Image (cartoon, rainbow, N blue to C red; front, top):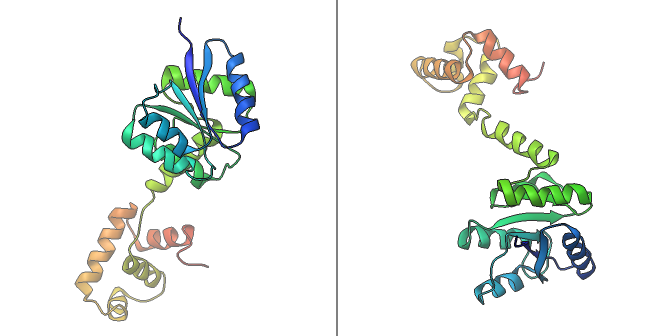
Length: 211
């Protein structure tokens, strides 16, 4: 059985060599090459090197970082499996790597057993999402599904939380009562509420108004 080929792209020599020894200690895995940054790796790919089964890609590198390298890989070799490596666990960086095609994201202090599991999962299933990454993905999904209100809708909601009548709200917004009726019905449908009280409760819950 041929071994699973790994390429390491990382500018820290001591880390990349230590990582190479660790990968080599795993059964059925071997390191096929080490590159200091994204540009060096891409130059090698353009020069004809055989792409590995998995690329271990550092996020923070000089000359060409992991995010830019990941974008190039996604555009030119979309089937290439990549695991991002970093000391950085902020949500924005993680999601930029994942949305640009990385199949996993590991911190550099990851336990060797978890690291080996990530390699095996990415090779066999195509992805490995740690608890951290899964949490960020769920958060992104929730944000994507969040209701987006227009500026005028927010203005209407704020006024609806006062004692003003709908006619007075229309006058205050320089709109016709018919247009205000349209705002009300659209918001009732969008927010899945049925009454003005429901609109007030929504505004309080989502901090559109303060009590």
